[in-house]
Length: 430
Image (cartoon, rainbow, N blue to C red):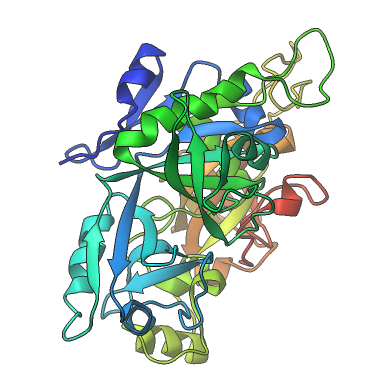
């Protein structure tokens, strides 16, 4: 059964434009935009965007043996996993393929694991099959819990205005890779329990908030109060709101700019860890055995994958940058927007002068016109190993032409020195 957001009625009342995430038979309805894409994107870069996440599932792991069990199962080191930490990891099958890409949170009496909603049930089933005598209980709690996200440089400010830690203290510093139990004050005067995890997926502060499904509407409306407050210190006749509800479209552009690869989009259940572009952040090569380790270790020590995810910078010869700025929909009348490849667009090696283009060497997994780069086209693509070296020249199909492209040294395309780049997440070398 497809997962439905508890906030669906609110989105419908706001006349949000929606689409399906995932296959048609089990797709999840997600908000794409509230009709103001440029302003939604600008809130991520300049203030704070509030995003509903029916695309995410949650797994709960309880029992006295949960640490030792997961350390034998997952690719990440779990020993010494302290309260308040979160760690990204892969759960592999026996052939070393990625069954789930997850972020594990230690919230004290249990672990919570964030996963793609379409991978949650399978991950619970396959992990549970290895519980023999251990005191471990694994449940898919995606229907009992729901996730929201705050993305933007003011995300912590917004959270701090509405929440406190469970001991009553202020939120304070919440570093990337940490989580905390909090109480969020709602309009009825009561507080709702939540788990907040910091995960900077868009190159700015990112906070994912896990709330019980019955409380998520109240928490969402509490955060929306910040939409009526102005950005501190922002002067002018048109005060900029501190927060704005955003859809998947704005988030997707920002996460592609930041080089955040996503499971079931940029890689999936047929991928090997070495192909994903995020190997170093998910896999420990110093820990003991885990399921699929032999495949991972052998490839790491003796060879390389057939393909790998890389970041591409594309050039459209017909593109003339205009006066568009981040969050401003107005462009110079003489500007020509660059063409953007679609998901699945073919990638080719650049041929020798006078030679024909040969067989494809890969395909685009995600692409956008990057506002942070004056709407230059950028992409993430899975390409053959011979083409992954930074600086490699390629050609990418876009509409009816082949655009020149260059493999970047990192998945991220954010300009160095920008505020966004200074807090970006995965920038794994290609």
